[in-house]
Length: 106
Image (cartoon, rainbow, N blue to C red; front, side, top):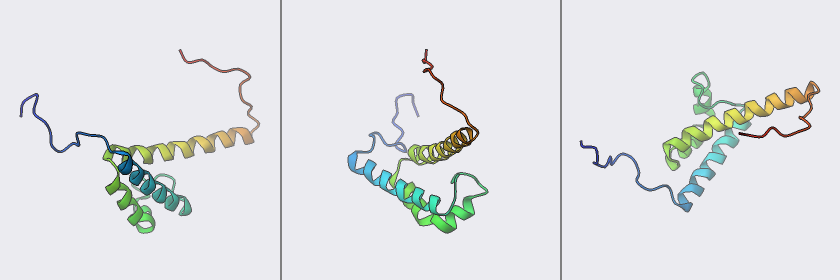
């Protein structure tokens, strides 16, 4: 295999609009199932049996309809967003207030 040979195992074009919608719809159904079964981290090995027994068909559909990197990314993002939301709610319950100014990114 040379430097310029094409690896056929990776898709050459990104998913089109129809494929993206199929992926997002499958993702939403899977995440609804996770939420209804109180599963936060679908990538946690300790939760895998719970995920498979309650949401296995939705997970399979999600995995089959999305690019592998999206499948991984969306699950990580969901867990990080849940963790962040809970942390903010905890801070607000303890009386935390937003800063009176914006911190600029440099």
